[in-house]
Length: 280
Length: 337
Image (tube, rainbow over the protein chains, first blue to last red):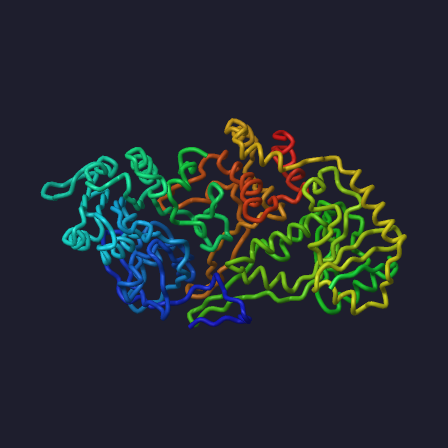
């Protein structure tokens, strides 16, 4: 359905590819999971993102939450927060959505072969990590112990509950913590940093993958580093305002790096100086 | 294909008139309100040959302030491409250097089709600066007043004639086709060019080396109190960004004509505005002004050298003229140097 004029030997980096929405699953009151048709030959790494595009509304960067090797479709987890995500939330199965990508560098799971892994997620930060978690759990023998600390505002907003149960059954030590607990739920309370030490993994040699709000990322990275984890092993994926996703529009530039092309995955070593949103 | 020629000034208007037959001719013209700006030429005699160096840069012709990217409707999407042939006459060496760097920025791994298609169809005829403005400091950056390379066609005013230098494949055709207008240069032409170059170099009032500034920042000798004082004087007008021949940031918006028909376009954007980095949930990573002013300077003084081996500044001095708070590149560099 897309045609390009004048497309002689240049590939159009800003033109989204139209793909069909196969299924829309309500996860929470404001978050939906979109299963999209995967174009032939489309491959992505855990941690990479797409520019999701609705003509007339605009484009937003969204991490892929599925795993290329395990899923026949592309899954995006979208929370309704602005104009474009609202437009995406209007989409129904059978509709078309534009995607550009995969973009960004992605996680380096091969660096953690044979080592323990700790995943730390906050809120919708579980979405990009889910791609990596499924990748790791699928070849669990290659890795050491796996653990997850996942914080959420309240029990109703905990995402991917059936999968967390499945990961637990496969041997992952998962702690889910919420800010406010209602009576009969088995989650812990408190912020994620309070639960990091409860995980019985080797912090000295282990690797951690973190995604969540900036404040959370910052304190988790600092804490893990204080607990003896080498800064190169503390990996996060960052969020930023993006318009192009390919290092041109300049919106995501911060501290000498374009988050879209140099990231979005960075190690603590690379962004230690980056002050998130407290200081310049 | 390179080569040097001499063009008698009497032949200039004929040459330009011929070039205009085959493509749009853009040159410095006086607008109705008295400013000199680059615009499409209708009468060759109206071209302002002796305009100051600091007229608005030719950036908007290869990276327009507003560029339509895609037309969408219920039926599909058309990528819009501008392939109009253009000759831009009268740009300065600093601007040519900026274009050369922009070519690298918009090229590379992800090639920007919109930029490349405009650029491919544009030939620049630049004029070396015999009379730099008091705000110019290209001499300290090697981006002027005369270029050794990185131009299509460079003219040097030698009084009654121009020394014409062809510096690129694209620049060869406009000269070759009207070869009978051009003579081969002799020793006296080169001598005159050398003299003009020397006298131009001595006219620069500002001597700035950004490398010293960069080294100081890298060594951590510039603390935030300095940037705080800079930020205090920032009006957040975005003038520096719009005037800068090397500021390339853009915003993308979808404009709807009817509910299912419209245009996706990009517009110049500026990092001096608070909303520039605004994220979902109203998170503002660069809420404080100091973060934004610092970001602009660091992008030009640290990121560009690291990525491209050249400063993100060509010393055109336009921010010096534009900035109402006097926190332009030259002033800051002078303070830090």
